Image (cartoon, rainbow, N blue to C red; front, side, top):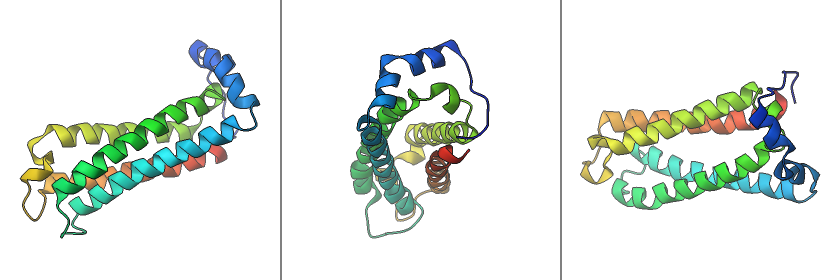
Length: 164
């Protein structure tokens, strides 16, 4: 881990010193298992998002966006749930150091951007894939491009956590 200072907020210290944090650090099997599940969660999340967003951007025009949405959105949601749950377990091992890690901070910011984009996309009229013609409206395409950038960035910065 990089040379940045730890953030010593009481709740971060308590989480790190909890039985959960200790178990995660001390088990030879638990940490690697949780890490693999976290990665599988992000793979599942990204796969669902990427397939749908690429269709919105114009790839695979023979695929109906509404049909893809019914498959891809729940898949992405399940991946997000798994990634968050396992990410919280991983965070408990070094909460004070991770909170100060710039790559971790960027990752969380990009996840926040990606989630905000999802909320906006699904709460406006143009976000309804069943109402689109052959070409999705430009705001949907912009949202899809932003989504791909945010989630790709989250994956990249997640990988960089170990190096910063």
